[in-house]
Length: 281
Image (cartoon, rainbow, N blue to C red):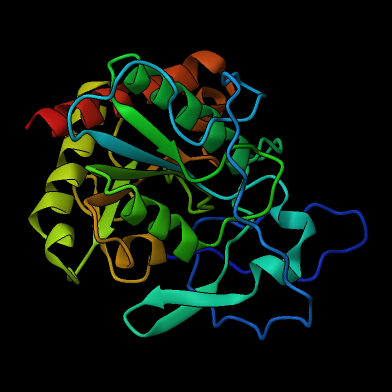
């Protein structure tokens, strides 16, 4: 989902897991295959999260800080690749456009998938925020399901009346030397929340990640920020929202960091600190 948006999952070869990058030109969406669509909004659970356990639909711990609600959106989902008809189904994307329900995401060259990375980082961010009494809502509760669709992910943030919505992703650029993180925000804004509040959230995420030792992207956006008009989750949000592309999974150094538990904790610590700083501002 970067330099340009993800490629759409084609019909899968029997038994094969196809991964599409978060980069590349935004293609015309194919007509959805005939299918009886099932509901793909995940049911909430109440178990304590671990690296492989489902996430709760919201943090069950201490009373939330007054008025402070954060929605974390781990990109993609582990079951997307095996359900091409469902994730290729067209849904509203804002600005009068439609786009596929979801995509599979990218992976490292060794096969570590973006959906697993984003799920684990979101879990770690959520645990840190919940420990501070902030109510945390997740857009998906496991890494084995399908979806939810991009319009539903935005709706979860809107329905929660979130003070901040942060979507967590990683890129898959094959450009030589491409590395670094960037933060996307909706532009031009479609409502007040997409204006100054979302830009401020994006800037705090950028500044805090940079202070935490992460380099800004050398191949997309400018100075770590990327104004986007094509991302449904941002277009459809009525709450302050930003999307973090944590780095390029096809870059060897960043792939090593993303596949390491310590590396994922490093990302999570920076993102959680940024959210806390934004909420306090």
